[in-house]
Length: 274
Image (cartoon, rainbow, N blue to C red; front, top):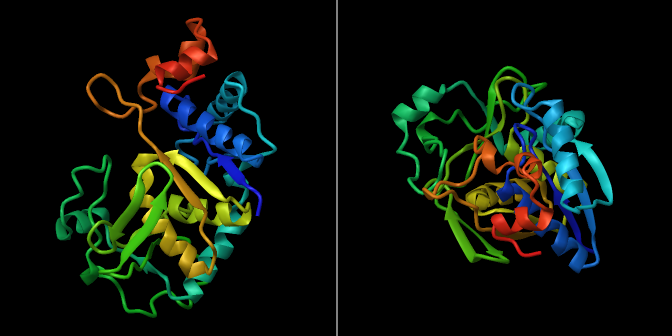
């Protein structure tokens, strides 16, 4: 299969320099391989995603010199794809409905990993329902759905930047959310569904998602789908060592553009060469 990459901004704010570096790197790897690039707008969250930020992301990418061969494809228009994947996971017994609150998870679980920013606590196996829970559900609406991880199994993969990686289910991560209570597909399900449907052969993204890759590999396996190759880039951090976020407005691509910076200067600021 020829190389197929993707650029997938989430329009919950303006793109910052760190995201710009990652998207440009993804574009370059695809072009160097003579492959295609899909632009996918990950706008699933109706409360946090806004049309103006989608427009800004597309404008900023074009200003950076990034081009794409397909898209933009909007996740908000692909609910049928995600519902089909949910049904397949339900039928395989890989997911289950959970009425356990976040507070109950926090109270019963181990503390989050200190090295994972914005981490959630491990979901305790004792709070899982019986193995056949949810098999007769007609839809995922109205309740959280979690993926049942194989406790004790180590998930391994090779990363183009970080080399061999290994995460143990039930230790490094627990049963994770694939469908939210507000009837929105969760990240782990949506990106796997899309990467399979779009034939993505390599995923290029930030190293904060290394642990997420282990979770997603379990989803690929449950679907009987071949996973892509992985390339996780170092994060861009501020002077205090915190990773850049969309709250760092001064380092947004739009703000840097307004101050007269060139695309090469923005990428240099983020640690990427011309």
